[in-house]
Amino acid sequence: MAFQKAKGTQDLLPAAIGTWQYVEAAARELCRRYGFREIRTPMFESTELYQRGVGETTDIVEKEMYNFEDRGGRSVTLRPEGTAGTVRAYVENKLYSEPEVAKLYYIGPMFRYERQQAGRYRQFHQFGIEALGALDPALDAEVIALGYDFFTSVGLKGVRVELNSVGTPEIRAAFRERLLAFLEPKRELLCKDCQSRMDRNPLRVLDCKHDQAHFEGAPSILDSLDESCATHFDQVRAHLDAMEIPYTINSRLVRGLDYYTHTAFEYKAEGIGSIDTVGGGGRYNGLVADIGGPDQPGVGLAIGLERTVLLLESQQTELPETTRADVYVVGLGESAAQAATGVAKRLRGAGLAVERDYGGRKMKAQLKSADRYEARLAVILGEDELARGEAVLKAMASGEQQTVRLTELEAQVITQLKEMDAQ
Ligand code: HAM
Image (cartoon, rainbow, N blue to C red; front, side, top):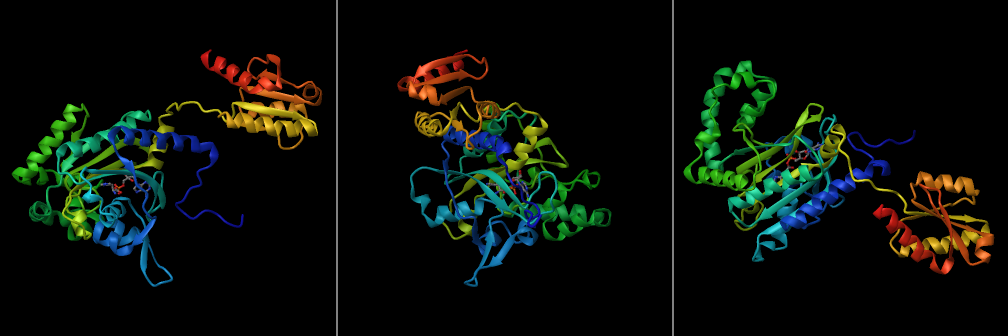
């Protein structure tokens, strides 16, 4: 074959797209209920936005971004995540001047140059939400609840919420020293990744999958919180309890992006190879100001849609049935084929999904095609029927046939489909 898709990308073919549309519809419906409105921001932004927004020492900025110079000599980057762009749009369009909290959501592709594996791609899709303009811990809890509801509403089981507080940058700086004092004597025992993280971002060391045995007795960030951080954390928990959202506290959860303050959380599930995180988020009170906006707080999350779809498959979740066609119009002969075009147009106008033949095939082949489309009704138009101003209506499941006047065809089709729905 001459061309193949780029490594780490996927073609989402029509046969699988139903699952994607189902998942996206669930996301949009939940956003409607929780009052989040859609925002669509560009797929590329200035490289500097991500350097400042996501953080210079993160894996994303250090080694995963698709950066390129455009023809005007500007350095731009395919968005690796949605928060920085959404916050940039919030600032640039002065959404902060509106009296209510800005509750925004997005669904779309993100790009990270990562090693391909099950559940990890270079172009992937996120459903994300961002709520800007309030410090209220109820907002953190509602963001977490929306994500939790998303997984249950698509029918997934066993998705767990892990919760932590990462405090403020000052608290993290003090905790970093305590943690380094604990880790330094063990440096040689730790894996290469941990050793390099100790120098760049020691909090992430505790996240390591291999070295957990060495971390017994490590200091916990939760013991380092000041009173206002601890109160915020307690209140988030109280709001989660009020909504009966189950969660566990994981004081080692730090997330891979630099902008978090206070609340940090992840959704975990088994069933996608070695990956167990399907979504995550947290509060980011300094980010808006960091990228040049007013001092407005924010909180949000993002869920990986490939991972959601993989989980639905691994749990063999039953999705609502969708048929490709309500009606198949069979036209036999040239003038009947033209009449079929007219009939199909009118039925589509009435809101029905209509298929037809595109090759002048014989009756038997056209009815076979109707079966492939899972049509519930066939409208059969032959030259003789047409001459009499009639058509035959065939119920595909029972095989029952009925002759109807062409003038009443549309009404008859609708009545019969309704009767089938009621059965
Ligand atoms: P993140 O944890 O980097 O957070 O990504 C969120 C989710 O996107 C992950 O849990 C995962 O499901 C999915 N994901 C990330 N990378 C890949 C990949 N290479 N292939 C497939 N799926 C992937 C963020 O992006 C933050 N912006 C979330 C946020 C919003 N925090 C506050 N607001």
